[in-house]
Length: 357
Image (cartoon, rainbow, N blue to C red; front, side, top):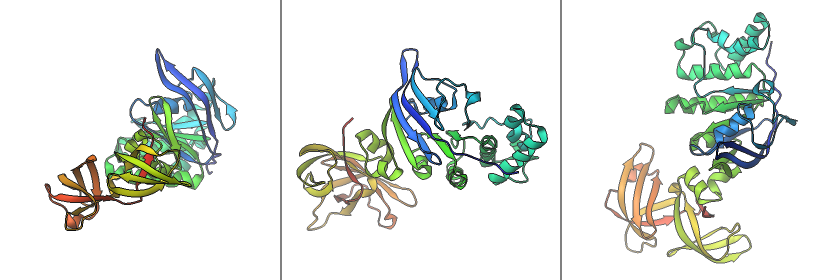
């Protein structure tokens, strides 16, 4: 027996959710295409988990419409929606074997035990745990328990798989490995998946598209590269790329390019919707170049206030006329000592004009 998955779309149309006097979700609209993994990303309290729970049918909107696979599910209960959810806590039954945990939802829906256990074995094989069915959850590692939770969701053959902070209970090294396994599995079976996290690196690593939320609304959505390289606002630039936000001036425009002055430095950047005058420039930490001051240095003058060695990179805080800049430098064998006077310049890649929020 093999599992069959049909990928469904998800569509929110002007959806609002209210708890008491608080708007948890404020008139949001988006579409998730079948077979894509889309991440809802944002700080705590932004509305991402509430959005996921509304897809699942665990919460219902005050207004607007929710579509799954082209079907209006706005008022349907969770039991009538073709979705499965992987919870942050995994929620495995400690007294049941791994196979019984995976088969639980199938048996609860009325499937015969033998058929449910066959599908359970297929699900465990799909996540790389064939032969583990007889074990108890306590006999598995954290990463293996997480895969059991994914298998339990997949055997229900949902149109949409929902993952609520699925890696938050794992250590950093294991998170990297398991997120790659989830992404490979999602691509292998062509499943539609909606993934919630507050971890920017995690979102960039697994997503086809990212929907960034803040204060109950969508701040920006796009591919990981679009959000990182073309942030629409200072919030996105800071939240996604930990960018430095500095004052700059557009001094001339030509077609779709802008000549931008940052103190005495000049750069040609994508114009977007900006006009001549004062603007904010997002500067990614890795776009900043530092060198010890020598005769003929052309950059801005700065002083290294802090230097931190992190194995594969150096991180600096540098005081200059633009403020305190956060810098990431991969030249660990050429570390600059604290207190050094430096010349500062920017690479063309890693700079973006942004709207103030």
